[in-house]
Amino acid sequence: MHTEEREALAQRARAVYEEEEERQRQARQAAQAAEEAERRQAERQAQERFGQALTVLEERLGLPAELCAWMHRHPGQPGGLCLQLYPPEPFGCAHCTWTLHPAAAAGDLAAQNWYVSCACERVPFSCNRAGWIEPERLRDLLLFRLEVSRRMHARWQELETEDQAARAELAERQAEVLARVCPWPKETPLTLYRVHYVRGAVLTEGGDCCWLTETGWSRSDQPDAEGYLRLEPTAGCPERRLLKLDPQLHRPMFEKLVLSSREQLPLELTETQEEQISGFQWQHYGDRDLLVRDPAGSVLSFFQVPLPWVRALLTQSEIGSENHHGPQS
Image (tube, rainbow, N blue to C red; front, side, top):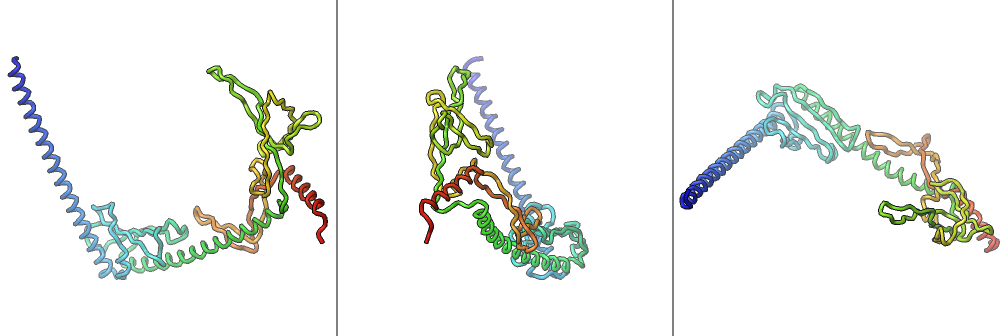
């Protein structure tokens, strides 16, 4: 085949390709236009059915106009008829969703049973109900549940207000208990030492030396007469340890901490203590726990208090401070 013939064949192939591409593009556009027209037609029909349903509910089934004004068409069901009702305050809240739909989208809506679902994600004991209801009872049922929802939301608001006040009061009581079970004398700084030292070494796969380090707490940065450093118990290591640290081998490094309040104490130097605080009670509502004041009740509180040896140091520091300042006149 000569060059001219191949070029002519290539031109014919390109022309056929472009014609086919254009035909497919026009077909896609036509399909998209038809699909959009069908969607709009379905949307108009659904909106018309929604308007007809509101008319039936208000004029034939006697629903108040205010109630119908809160209704909207469910956007996710264009082929069916599903109404959503969002009761505003004080009858509901932003977390309330009521759903209504007839047994069939076609036919006489005033003669059909209606499925009613009332739910609230915020108020666990609200009028969360669902079921079929006869058309002649629909109005009274919705009004009844509307009043139930109003009362339950008002009650929930009271409980939340009580919960906030009770939590604030409990926090004050907890602070008093913590000050009693774990007093930190005023103007009594506590000096502790955190020591970092090398306890060994390992070789990595690459042949490098990797140091293994440990941390401990001590009352002093100096060893005793025999050269031993006493490391006090911690939350992770309840045993008291005596170590003889070689400066060249273990490379100890001391960090001095001067603590003046309980909040500055590292967590590893504390332990958990339980205390019952009377006058309160937890009430469970679904996945929510609300605190109420109850003279006959009590709640369990957990506190992080210094370890015994830290408390002993605080006592010694307080006695030393009193002896230093002398008796007050």
